[in-house]
Image (cartoon, rainbow, N blue to C red):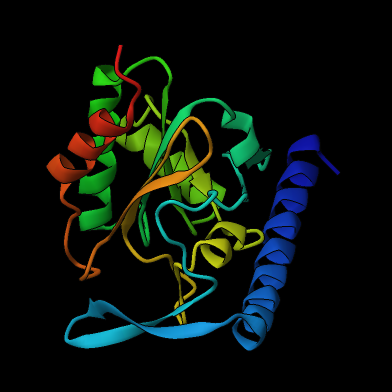
Amino acid sequence: MSAIFRFCRHSLLTAALAAFSLNAFAVDLQAILPERLSKVKAGNQPIVLLGTPVSTGEVAPTFKVVDANFKTVSLADYSGKTVMISVVPSIDTGICSLQTKRFNSEVANLAENVVLLTISTDLPFAQKRYCQQEQIDSMPVLSDAVWRDFGSNYGLLIKDMGLLARAVLIIDSSGTLAYIQLVDELAKEPDYDAALTALQQILPQR
C-alpha cells in the first residue's frame, strides 16, 4: 500500500467521522439548547435561534473554536486585547464573502491591541480553501463546526440550519461584551461603519 494511498484513505476516514459526529451532535444540541424566535429574517420568515442570548455590559462568555489545522482556539487566547468578531453564516457565499473581505481589509487600520476574528460553522477544510483562494490573510478565520460552542454560548445558532446568524461583536480588553450588532436579515451585510465607529469609542483613549 503506497504512502499516498494510506494518506488519502486516512484523510477520507477522518473527514467522514468528523461529518458523522457533527451531524449527531447538532441533533443533540437542538434538543437541549434554549430557543427563541428572533427578529432576524431569512427572506420574510423570522428565524429561531438556539443558545443563550447575550447582552452588552456582561462578561463575554468563553468559547472554543478551531483553526484551519483543527487546533483549539479560545477567547482566553486573546486575554487583555480588544476582540472584534465578524460572524457569518457560510463563508463561501456572496454576502459572507463580502463581509469577510471587508473586515480583512480593515485589519491594517486597527490598533495593535485589537484582534479581528471571523467565525462560521464551515468546516476548517472549506475555510482554508476559501482563504487561500481569496487571499484572506490578515485575520484568523475560525470554525465553530466541531462543538458549536460559540454559537451556543452567544445564542447565534440557527435552528434546523446549523449555521450562525450574521453579527458583529466587540469584546473590550477587560473581557466585557461592549457591542452587539445582530443583522436583521441573513442576506444583508452588517453596518460596517457603525461597528468600526463603536470599536474606536471602546478603545482606551491615549
